[in-house]
Image (tube, rainbow, N blue to C red; front, side, top):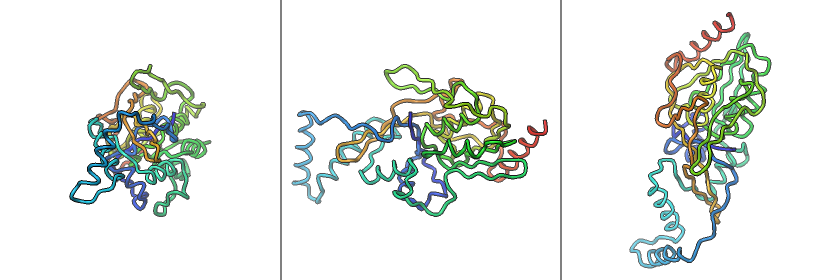
Length: 301
């Protein structure tokens, strides 16, 4: 399953990208979606003629000029608001194409301001430091490659708003031999337990750095490693987003994104509105130092 998750807190590495601004509006890079190439909606039935009639009357009679396209977008946005779903939103065609292109790592589609990449790996004398900005396509493989052969790993997920669920699962799997990573619950369907994608290094000491900007798919990684006793969590409480969003592509190339389910950590915790409390509380200025100290203790023992 592929998914995204949004946390409306912008990441400085992506400030310059228009798609990132759209992505992070309303706290949400988000939860999880079933596919980055979502299915189209069913053709409109004859009962939908009332909406078209209202659109035509308003477009031709309103005192202020308004296009039919603007009215249709407003109608869709109004329907989404009626759901009471804080994560539901409408994507115009180009914005949706940019969004999915960015998530899939298409840098030709989206050109954010200069940055070092979604995954940054620093190799020091005793530690491998892995900083993951967001979970786009290929992140899990980059993390696996970056930590191979490490004596200790500092996984920095501070300010990570989420991204693709598959990549979050693969990232967590890099530190687990087998077993559950996350459970996905969707209305009308049995709960689905998503397990380790392929065996990872279950022995290397791991410390994960988190803060309020750590959200959704990033929280899946944190929750899995915490519940499976595979990491010490250092920093401040995470954002608390445990719902799953899925896009539905419309016939004109636009899309609507809806909350369709929720995820639970391996121990059965729903993080929505709660988040994850760290094992060791630390401010942003000293979180990395505290994390390194913990790793020194783990490697020394």
